[in-house]
Every structure is written in structure tokens, then in C-alpha cells.
Length: 305
Picture 1 (cartoon, rainbow, N blue to C red):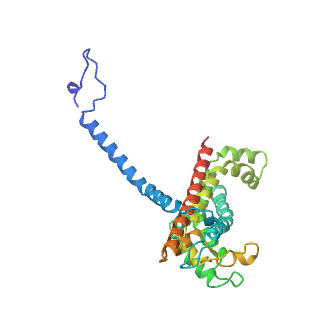
Picture 2 (tube, one colour):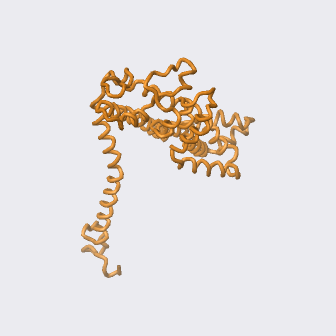
Picture 3 (cartoon, rainbow, N blue to C red):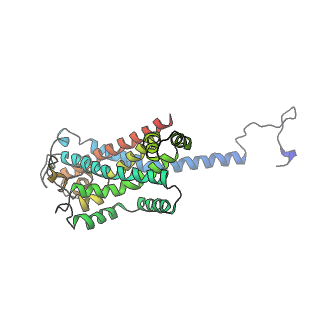
């Protein structure tokens, strides 16, 4: 654009008002509309899935759904109570394994070996592990734990299922702990060390409390990711149509029902009532995972205040 082509007002000053008919402004609006359309298309599958599951599964909700056992094939009635309890049990076992290991690994990477070759190797392995398909984790635990009956002679069990899910949780917990601790200012560390605190006390009393919110957010996201997995549990926890005796050791060392495996089993059955139970279980599982994600979102917003 030359000097003479600039539009000017009556008093000779450049006209800087917005002109919607200019080619560049028209092109900008078109590109903005295309970007908004693509954004809507990206979110549309999530909205459709949630709406469909809520409509199909929400209409089947009843009190018996949360209090009774699944029915045998071909019979009506019953619920998914044991699968809800089993999902909670397996997820808690996975969290008890993954959280200490993941947080400890993140502390080592952020506080003790930020740039060493071993830390770089661990970070690379963590990134690779985060992309490993979930069924591979199930096959690994199946081959090393289930078939070998190393757990006191037991094969399929809640413990084996929890171990498989913990493998899926580890990358998220390690990376969020590592990144969360890096956000803590080094001045806090130097101040604690300056007054005579050891490295261990500094981590325990200063850096960990300061990074609690991002670490907790990562833990919640890891739990939400693991709670909905099916393939690892088919190879490790299997399924049980009965209540698990969780008051004894036999309960966690025996096959246990979970919502994801129940959905898989009942969805492929040729019985309408079992298909409806699968939709109801899908609704419950979606609500659980959505609640965990909303809780992690709240933690993130709480940290930013």
C-alpha cells in the first residue's frame, strides 16, 4: 500500500476506522468462522457420546441397580452393585501402588537429578510408557503375575488388576509431580537450606506442600484415566457375578467384577435386559470419570487463585 492510497478524513488525517468490506477483513472473518467450525467439530463427538450415554443409561436408573447383583444370562432383574464396589477397589489398589512410586519418581527427577543422564532416561521412558496401549499393560501383568500364580498361588485377582492399572497411572503421576515441583521457586529451597535444613526436610516441608495442588491434580487425572480401562482388567481381574469378600484376603486375591468389564460382557449378550444394564453401567462409569475430571479442574482453578 502506497502513501497516496491511504484513505484520509476530511481534515487530512489517516482514516483508521474498521472497514468490513476490505478483502483482508473479509478473509479474517472467514478464517475465524472456519476455526470456530473446526473447534465445534472437535468437541461434537464428546457432546454426542455423553448425551447418548446419558439418555440410554440414565433412563434405566433405579435403586436396585445400586443394591443388587447382576442377573444370570436370560433372566431379568438385578443390578451392578458388585461391579461398582469392584471398580472402586481395583482403582484404590492401583492408586496405592502408583501414587507413592510416581510421586517418588517425580521428586527424584525434580529435586535430585534434574539434568543427569539417568533422569533423561527416566523422562524418556515415562513418555514412551504414556503411549503404550493399555492392553499391553494387561498382557504384561497376565504373563508375569496371573499365569505364574506368584500371588500366593492365585491367578486372576483384584491385586493383579490394580497392578495393571497402576502401570497406566505411573506416567501421569511422575510427569505432573516433576513439573509441579519445578514450578516451586528455587529461593524457597535455598532459604530452607540456608537455615540448616537438609535436602530431605526441604523437600518434605517446603517443596512438596508448595506443589501439592498440581500433584493432586495429576493424581486425580491418572485415576480418572485408569478407572475406565477394560482391556487390562479382562486379562488380570477377569469378572465375578458375586460379591467379593473384601473383609478377608481371599477377596482381593480372587476375580472381581468391574464396571468396564461388565459393560463389555453384557453389551455383547443377546438379551435386551443385559444390554440395558450395560447402558446403565456406562452411565455410572461416565458420571464417575466426569466427576473426577471436574474435581481435577477445580483443583487447577484453586491453585491459580
